[in-house]
Structures are given as C-alpha cells and as structure tokens.
Image 1: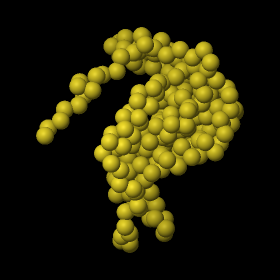
Image 2: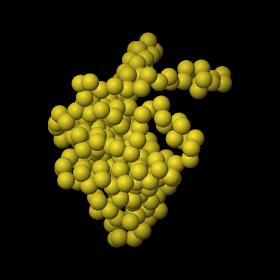
Image 3: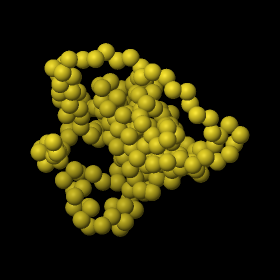
Image 4: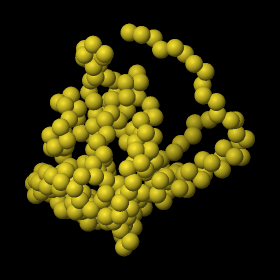
Length: 223
C-alpha cells in the first residue's frame, strides 16, 4: 500500500475568540431553523446547486479515508415514479403489520402514513449508498472501515449543505431499501443507507410543532 505524502494543513486564518463564538452561534441559529418537510413544491432546483452540496458531503471524514459512499441524484420523473411505487409498497407492509405498535404510536402525532407523494413532487431525490468494500486499481477487493458511521457523517454534511443553500429536506428510510439498488442499478457490494428528498417547500407547507431537547439535556462538560 502506498503511503500518502504529508503536506501542510491548508491555510485558514486564525480568528479572534469573539468571532469564533459569533460564527458558531450564527451557524447553530441557522441550523435551528432546519425542519423536516413533507410538503414540497415542484419548483425546479438547478443541478449545479445539488452538485455543490454533494461535493460538500464528499468532504466528510471516513474510516481510513476510504470514503465509502455513493450518491445517486435523481430528477428523472420516470425513475422518481418507480422509486415512489416501490417505497410505498414497503411502507404499506410496514404500517399494516411489520411495525410494532409502540412505533406506530410514536409516528401518529407526525401524521405519516404509507402515501409518499413527495417522492414525485420534489425536484430531487438523493439515494445515499454505503459501500461495504471497494476495489483497488488492479480490481482487488479492499475492505472499508466504519462504513455506516462514515456514510452517516457524509449524510449530515449533505443535509447541512442543502439547508445552507436554502432548500428543504426529508430523510426517508423505508425498510428494507433493496429496491433502490435495483432501480438505480447499483452493485451488490452497496447497501442503500438513506433516501434524501430535497427541494423548495410548498408555499403552504406545514410542520409538526415539536419540541427539541434543551442543550442541558444532551450536553455535559467535564472540565
């Protein structure tokens, strides 16, 4: 295995602490406005915007720098239709027998059901795949490490980037998601991790009035 050359850390200007705090607060306040949306507009979103957000996702850290992710950005109406039909079939199985009763009770306040029209209405569906192994230049199989954690980090980067760009998102995880690999022609070495819906919210979009944990409930400093 070739050892990479070491290079200096890319230059970043050192900020005074008050500006560091201001930037951190501004970003936290901006992300606090992020909400999961189920009512999307069909207003187009240029491919270049989605591409820039995907490039941001590709900067996420990963186990041994294997970058075990693949993104399929879908705007084709026929493909979106196929994905919706397959997802709704799995969702019907979930809501009518596969889901435990307590899970359904937790979902009830959100008003979700097996119908997923947003999969066709939103301009973009981004299928995120986890690559359990890769291939070197000679075609030999190479193990990937911490793939689920790495892909989760990349998905987080992507959601933040889309929010920064002014778009709304929905994380959709029908289970199982094998249909995504089949519809999109991905190899057996990949596993669907998440279907991310992205676009502009509908003008009359409504979201549940939910409570997020207070910082004191999930943060503890040990100084």
